[in-house]
Length: 229
Image (cartoon, rainbow, N blue to C red):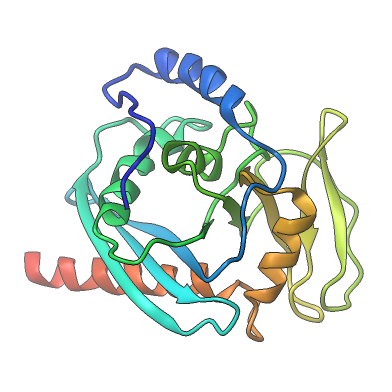
């Protein structure tokens, strides 16, 4: 799997903000996909002692959610930690893992935000635009915006609104548990994003693709630290 858009990474924070503003114009907020056969979940984990990060991507059949392939990549973090610019720190590592895939996913779920971002260009948008791939952000915590509390019923939703703009949906994935935040990344409508995330649930709070990607990178980080020791 190869990127469709070339972009620079050796940027200052100010340059990165300007690039976000430009790339944001490329985000498509409507459905631009056909039959979904494979979905990928992606996440990262960091080793603060070495300054490295490991990205993991797992591809599943859809809608059966049976694992097809998993890949990972380690990279040194080059961009500083700047709130609102985390995609410039994390996306190069994710790209290295995606490039190893032999199975092309039809849609990507990212553990992070998309349009629900101060400049409407979170990591789910960044990855989606670079690969020109339908992408959804599934975040565990709130970044921007306000929302009513969805009912305790599994599957209930509430609009996530920031500056009078709907930027995502708050989705209760299990009865009584904390909701997650579903936001558009690229080439997916908000209604479809919520529908697809619901179909990726298997009884847990977090959708299976991103939950298992999280477990994968945590295990890789622990193994990497053990090797270093």
